[in-house]
Length: 113
Length: 111
Image (cartoon, rainbow over the protein chains, first blue to last red):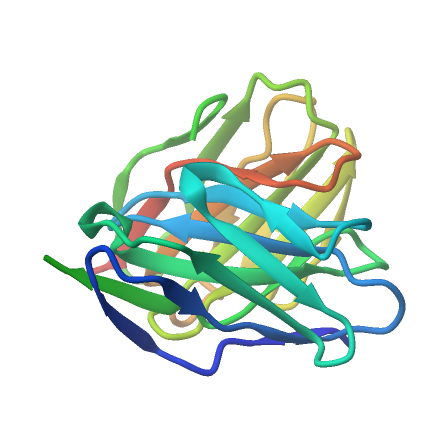
């Protein structure tokens, strides 16, 4: 069975500094990986995905993610954090059998002014 | 959230009562999903449907039921058999590209 781990419950970063939110995965076969963001009491918004191709994936709002097959990681990054990036971030992997998503437990990003 | 609506936004249930959460999409997506979100646990799959008139149980289907009579609609019923239903419920839909798009959610509280 597939699984996703987000080892940090919370990440704190100063505005203007680079940010990284970590994600590792376990899946048989080729992984389909996703990042979503959730603001309080809202649904999830899609940021980016990796299906195949370039290991560096660019997404919405200046976010990007680096796929590393040997380390089974898919870390989310942004060169310069904004206070408005403060939210809950979820990494997910697609279940190859049923096309649903398996989510990590989420990482809360706090960007201080 | 665009294209997927969920209602109501807040719902209160008394013990022993069944309640139904609505999910509608106008994206012409074939597949629809229901997830439950609890603090610190991420999202867990309740039910999913890949086509009209067909649906499958997810990881935590006990105490829930669904129907898929129309492509646009995938209502979720939380029955009295669900012992701990207080949670945030999220509906999603997707086409073959696999990206799921989520609705704004319904927060259910048991009184």
